[in-house]
Length: 149
Image (cartoon, rainbow, N blue to C red):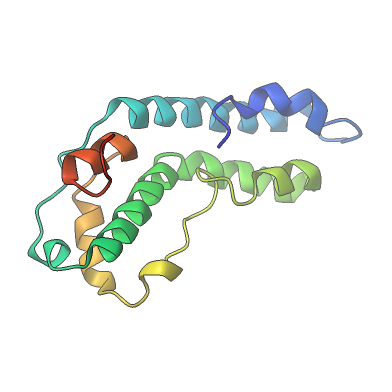
């Protein structure tokens, strides 16, 4: 996963683009927020909310729900900035940059395909109790979802 800001890729991605520079300020705003969210995520070891429903799941399902919520919180942290940037990219038709960002963890809502068989209302309730990105590895280790080495 890329941990450097996309702002460093800007000169390479914009070669040949005819977009106005002021519209590309949306990229910088999104990148700044992404960097902030990434920092929060690295520093936060979450006390995962207690839930009888979550505890009743198999270990594999717990891991899938945990990962989905982790990616969802990453996405939600930059959702406003990402939406603004997407609107500008669509408006000025910067397809190269739009394609690079498509699927990036902070740019698109994560897929829930691996947890579709579970109670979505319970996933929403659990997710609603978590307000920000968090360190997935450290949090998962404290929850016993991964083997510590």
